[in-house]
Image 1 (cartoon, protein in one colour):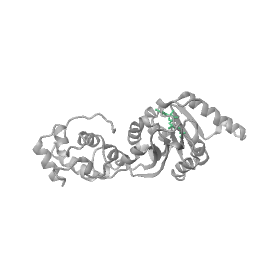
Image 2 (cartoon, protein in one colour; image 1 turned 90 degrees about the vertical axis):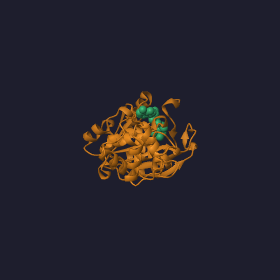
Image 3 (spheres, rainbow, N blue to C red; image 1 turned 45 degrees about the horizontal axis):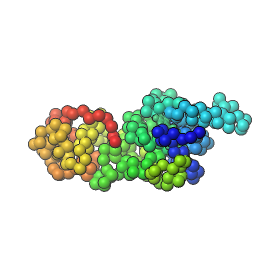
Image 4 (tube, rainbow, N blue to C red; image 1 turned 135 degrees about the vertical axis):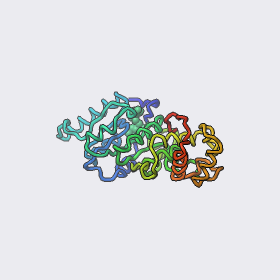
Length: 287
Ligand code: SAM
């Protein structure tokens, strides 16, 4: 079956990488693992050996049907009843999948694995962030440049809205990088696997999730402009913006890219206490 590049179909063929992805999930023997985009089942088969249950979410119905029947045939050949298999492949768009309901049904927080379709990496990361209460940990392959942004620290070139949004939902760490030759067909970019342990920080930072995320979209809207300029562009009076920065202990010339998550939270709280958070709604995207 030819791969469909519009669906980000670059199939992993490096067996060692497959084992490392599944091992990075830790003990999953009594856990439900949701795999995003199982494709031809390279990671799915290894997960099936290690996890209590595997739920694969595949948009391509031809691939989903083929993988389901291959897994059933494999089970039958081993003398196992396919109906009792621990793997289920659902034909669904991951972006419309209800992780919260699936977690409730499983009676536990979910683990997530996936060699992601790169054309929708950011929406998938947003979706997982939104579903953080239902998730325990994820091991995800993304293009290396995105992994660098996800794990970046303040002051580095890669630090931005994506880093803050992901890290607000729990710590992330890069695990390993693969060359294009690890895939068929090879993508045009290098790929990196990272682990994300879901532990939302909103309560500890004493910020309200939705308004604070909207505020972050405002202060990161104009790249390479100062925080003060971004606040003004979001509709805040200049003098109020400068006073709030000073009260939050942030340099008046600082850019959002150089400020820690804690300081951004302090700034939002100062503005909120004064009833001065900028009112503009910014579309919820973290690209
Ligand atoms: N896991 C397989 C592997 O590593 O070989 C395939 C990974 S491939 C990079 C991405 C997979 O995600 C493809 O099978 C593709 O059809 C699937 N996919 C693309 N868009 C999707 C979506 N919106 N929801 C679920 N799966 C999707």
